[in-house]
Length: 370
Image (tube, rainbow, N blue to C red):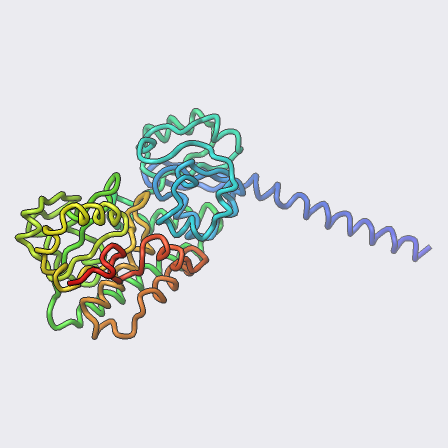
């Protein structure tokens, strides 16, 4: 009799445990938290949602930095169509197997997505960047799904509001520790770059061209406030022509600046190469081309700021212009260290295969006699 009762108690306990295990995810899914997004909207969202989508420039990148790509159930068409130049996507090509929910891209900025496409994948939360408050309210009303607006700040820049976005998404996705680690890592890299730059006896000067801004551009396309230059204390010669934002110089302005060192952003590399083939004499009148001091950088303005690539570029610039202060740095190795931490995989080789060696001579100039 005792053995029979013991047997019954065992199976009753086992059944209770199984029931608790089965109900735990449902209970968790029913939990909600209160948050405030980057537009100031107060929202009630599921705690630790398991099904999310990302809309807008750089939104998917932030979620991958948090290591939450496994929760993504659909992606924008742009992510699939143009994988080159975006390390977060190169590190996770499996995302390409997910259904396309909306086209994405520049035309989609501050516009409503394909509602049917979003609803088909049944997300619990929609994350979106560059969507104004009223549009976010409208989208949330139409979908009947919480819409959380994240932000990078102004295009083609780095604003610490990105940290707020990471911390907010980390709280919603139960990735608080990871979000804090990412913010700390990004801050540490910037402090390291600044420390090395401050040790230089003389502030170096340089020019960067081929900067992408809502599309690819040639050598005359530049940014007076170029992020990697600023991080390492390089004087940007373009700042004498304008102080802020994207700038298109003319060839005469570039000749008058006549930089000793020119960096070419990989995003504009093909256009620079094509223009060089058409007008070689112009380029040969520039000191940097005469002396073989033209250097390749990887593009970081690709669906807004790829911060990992911007940091990798800054280390390469420091290595070239401040070799003593950066003597312990190997740019490809450093790039892979950054990519590994942020995206989970060292994808420098894939980036270099597409654009060329970071800090090296651009491919179109290799073999050209000085």
